[in-house]
Image (cartoon, rainbow, N blue to C red; front, side):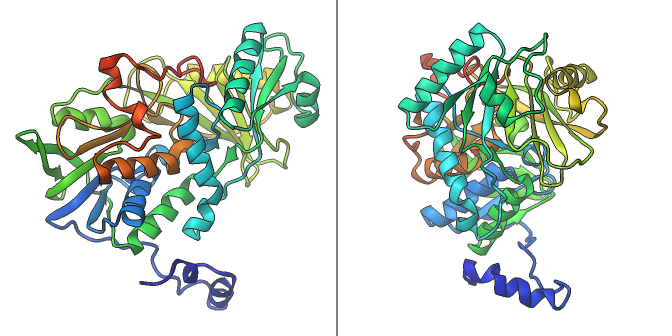
Length: 419
């Protein structure tokens, strides 16, 4: 097996530059499914591919398959605004997202593949006295958990983001929290990096293979019925975002999830104008600028349950109105494209990373609007849960059992977004 460090280096890039980059090997194989695997991961996004990667790397499992009904990263991994932060209120959430942020900080080196993680900082705006109190409470909680979080005054915000109209009448800006270590990453790169390294360790990555039914017998997993036939497995991990509840139902499990469209859009490219990420929980409008110069704008979820990857225009209209109030300079810009992802939301707006009552069946879902930022951390602890058949201490609070015990991790009002 070729060493990771031999794959991408200044020397290999220089060598391939002379022949028009025609001799690079394929990043991963495209095998047909085998009859049996030790573990099958359903979902070829960042969470699923990362789970397979950590299962192979840290737990020694080699006979693993990742099955994806479309193409790698074609679901929510490629349909988000790529914001990364860890400044959540409750301890359990903060520990999970901080674990992920620490993995993000070294992921390009770990994978020997540039995931384009840019720690440009994340700002959460306060528009009224209630926002100020809640944000300062969260800053204090973050600091107690060792997370970098600080308060910015209105004057400091104006200095950092001079294009912002802090004195607008509709959404006056009174201050903000700021996490310097937060930022953005390239959504495709995280999927491709995990896929490439998992493939090197023998993981079968099977695209265009839809999971149709999870089959069980006597309370134990048997395998997965797919569009390419039945595949037996000792363990199955479901990481299918908005469709996790649909697959769970085929195994007789009802997950406490609602699936809704979450919309985003990008503008025409312009010269650098904003060098941080700015979020507003009051209107769920957030913006950053990509390396290509496009403004990446996030909106909120639609009010109805749906599995469409579109959403209603009223959400986009409200988001754009808020953006123009906060940034009048954006008023004449053209929007290039709009899309939606399907987010699955738990009653407490926290994820499920858990084994189930069926032996060998595990779920990683319910991320709502926070899935991308948690990608490596989620994959890391989910791999541990599958391999050890028990939760990692970081994800112990996110089990299905909490919906029975009532010990919820209620991030609905604390996550700095409006789910």
